[in-house]
Length: 413
Image 1: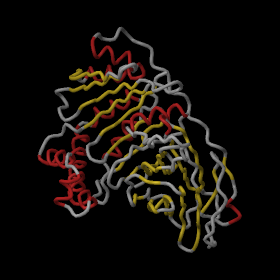
Image 2: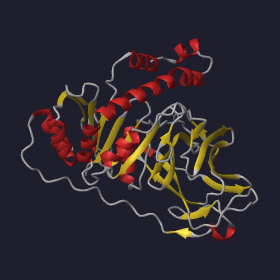
Image 3: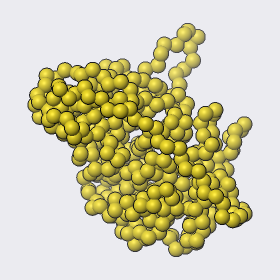
Image 4: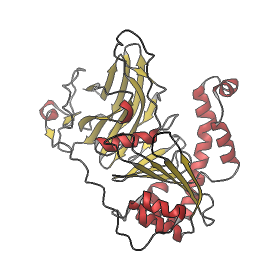
């Protein structure tokens, strides 16, 4: 399905856009990935091998993005191959280790058929299987992130001006320069045509001018913490939402992290969660996450799913021979049912969701209608779910993996 990210097993939050290093460093705070340090040694430590933490595929506008999260900066070998009825791009991290990675991710049905992973003693390979005879432009970039982690992104987009591919020997082409695009999957005459380097996105729009004094108390604190979302706070108050829970997470010597839960009797199945994450260091902005979620949905399906998610490894092994069977036979059918229930609920409250997004991202008034169109798409039992990147600035993610949620990231100064 064009426009989304598909998952196998564990979910990965899609990072998208061409944000600055500060954006990438801040967004990593939300992913919750912890850096693994080696044991101290009196002798000089050898360089740590790279660990591939996670990966995903998403569709952003006309581009397909393959995103790889690493525990440290590393430039992989990226080699495209084109042959008879065969076209693929191999992303290789020699001598790298890997966390639990999905063996296969479904493609975007536009350029990419599937994404496979191969982990061995020689390293980690990510094989992006392309549709044959569909020439494409390719770009690559490596962005540093907070706490030493890094994000490698391979960008792919269709090249309508290229000559259709002819059979070529299975040999690697020269790697493209960072931020540049080259045509692949095409004849040699067009392979080396370069496109203009990608330009950074415009700065996030300034917060709207205050139309009056904000309320006092916890709701008033939201106006101060996230001034970009003033229109959203006004909208939610008008829909009867109140702060049902607020909490501080005290870290000695550091600024407090604040979280809020907003609920309304008009929409008992929904909750708006807000998290204010202070800067982790110089050059990294504060991050504010506003998440509209339907995980308050009741019923047996929800209860069964929540209980299964609490199972430990011993409980899984006692009933299932392989952990993959647990995901495929136990979790996946429930996820499909939850997506259908959330789809029905979202269509009943389509006006609220459209208004929510119009206020959350006022510079894109059509975003709400676009989200409703994506939500209405037929649920496929083949996939555990889909994520869509609705906007890059601010970053807006529509999650349809189990419980529907819409997550907005606002950057502070």
